[in-house]
Image (cartoon, rainbow, N blue to C red; front, side):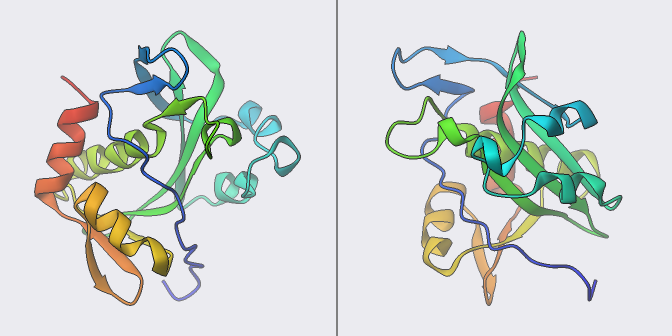
Length: 175
């Protein structure tokens, strides 16, 4: 795809949890991943603290955009994920935690790990053996190797293969 703009991923995997954890109370909350709807886009804006223009991702028919929410609290989006289904893997175009889940004073931990695990789950469902690729910021390559089990393929391309993908899916999605 010559016209693809590869956004360098800068998400931080703060902790691999079984769901997401409230940093104040320590309580764990089960999550759900679902498609972003047009109505969701009104709250997902740079004015509301989001770093990326998710309307562009949503309008691109080749991309699937998902939101992470807490079960029974679907109105508050914890994080977002944009995926493209390629011929033999899933490509993570963009991943972003909600503004209140970033930095020292974040409200929930585990958002990024949860969304990456979902990308791996989609890859298994599509018959790609869990293979997920993404473009990393150079300074985060080692972080993704250590936290996600991804390997550095070339340039800034990272790949999660079957074994770490299965670990992430089993951690977050007990079925």
